[in-house]
Image 1 (cartoon, one colour):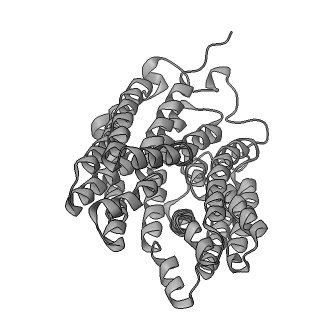
Image 2: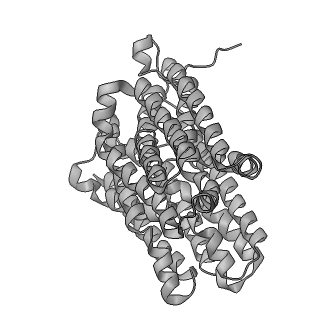
Image 3: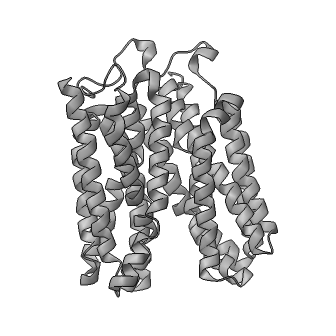
Length: 406
């Protein structure tokens, strides 16, 4: 029986890192947020500020990430990132005041800033010669898995044992994951006298015809501007859009249980979409899949904008298509970094695109609420997200075409 390549242990380590730093600390925090509101007697605005502070902390760490990983290395650095998330949960558990919860938000942002797709993408590119898209898709899908798996668990703990017990469970689980990440991840295959996955057979980076548009050398900096714009606009599509799905449909008049089911379906579709998109890019290339998944994403947003029709079939179709298409804005950043950064600049480009993504997400985070205040509905906000998606897709695809002509 053929021994499993060490690269898959690296993939598992990155998956655990993102499960905690992006899944538990960010996505699953929305489950505990109502309990924080009731526990402290805070206002909605004060409670929402925890998310804003976390986002600002995350953004600041994006600038510091290169220095952080140059100093600690990727093995220790990723473990420390998960440990920051564990400490943030411990601080949340001990907090009695708003300042304590804000401190926890800062620590959670640090964990997510250093435990993001940046180290995951760099490690996957080092360890995988083939199946990079699949590996990145698996890692990225873990953030949605955390929401699906832990939401009912955290809710049950909050209802039976209280909010502090819930945060303590998350802290212990995250600390265990930090140890596992340190044990699983290694800097590079060369340091272990190994070859990257697929390279030992002397094969091409992907199956025949998989990525004819993948460059051998990095693009000039001036030709990367459309990618930075696309990443920024897609940050709004992948962040404020999904987080407002529940309120989009409940304010449109859909039953709360139906809207909750739609949000769960979105999470499942998102997980499936990340794995399928990554695998499809391995097989058919980022350019072709950009058109396909771009069309799926736009179709989902069009249907989201029809929320006021109150038709359940449209709602469920909307969230499934939206979930399947959103990986273009998450896994897509890693694919574009590999396609346009070349071996020499992939780490630098993924950091730049993640930074643009974070800035776009932060700047447009209040856009749906502002539109709802003016129009009485969240549906028009999804037309804005549709416009952002169209501009982003065209910018990226034009970059692919320009590269092919050069």
